[in-house]
Image 1: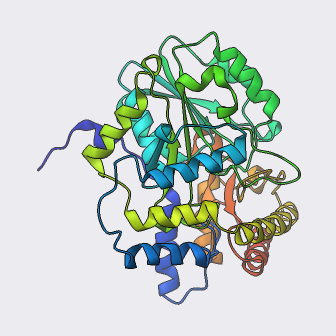
Image 2 (image 1 turned 30 degrees about the vertical axis):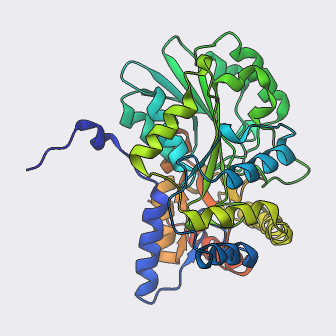
Image 3 (image 1 turned 30 degrees about the horizontal axis):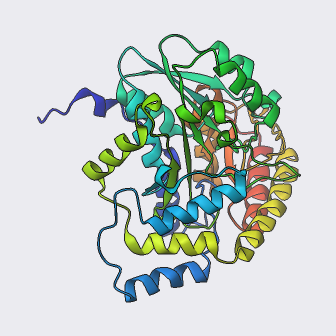
Length: 398
């Protein structure tokens, strides 16, 4: 038998893709499945973005680009960053990536090794913990509590930092909870981090445009005191419904004090993926600089669905759900149903044709919760809620 290095046995998965595969298999057998499991907008990429990629192909843009991306694409990211945060960054600080995950991969790989600790949100995106364990570092969960609106507590986060801590991962607006951490809490965290200059920060801001009820996203870029140790993750997938295009960007420091992080990730790109495909980069420029009416339409739809979801979930027996302030996820509490979360998610898929994700797939503090993505039509959401209600009213449990 072939033997790989032990690190590969520590790699986890993102169970949303496993649920998607099972839901697809059931649908292929003729089952009527409502998929509220995958975190993917159900809207098409706006037409002008698609046309920009087609034009790039027809204009002969078929070759390599620099590893950090086309200058024009990086300049578009600079314009977008200034508009969203009020902060001007250099295009030389921008790295165009094949999606959001490569930024996680690269950053965690840079800081994680045996004997070190990396703090990450729990419940949180499962790839954080998977990659931390892959590097041999110890994953240290930072609790995201329902009582706190699924925002992190600066005081609790800071209390978890030790001399072994290398990296702190933050995510707001958050997957899987829809939580948005208030600016005041971020300010407290940044102030407290002054006592821990050895800790780098990865701020996952992929849902920065997706907030509701007057909430506004607070970017870590707005705090110059942490810029020398900050990596910001963002991209096109969610805001412009471009998940399959595999287009992301990140902003890196590259000073001696930062350890020249940008140069390190550029070298990693050359060794791993060379560059992001050229036509997609032209599409990315069109997404940022072109009309945003389709984005605004999508966000209005998400907001309407959010209200339907919260009302419907709170009408289910044994279920309660606080109102998410960002992204397109609800994280209902199912602790009073009598079910373990993953078993309930599985039963709802197999017996009622509703695909959801069990909270434990997002961390040890996810037990008692399900993740529901409302990146699906209102009609399908209502059908799913009706099926869930009928299932839970039967009184069946594990």
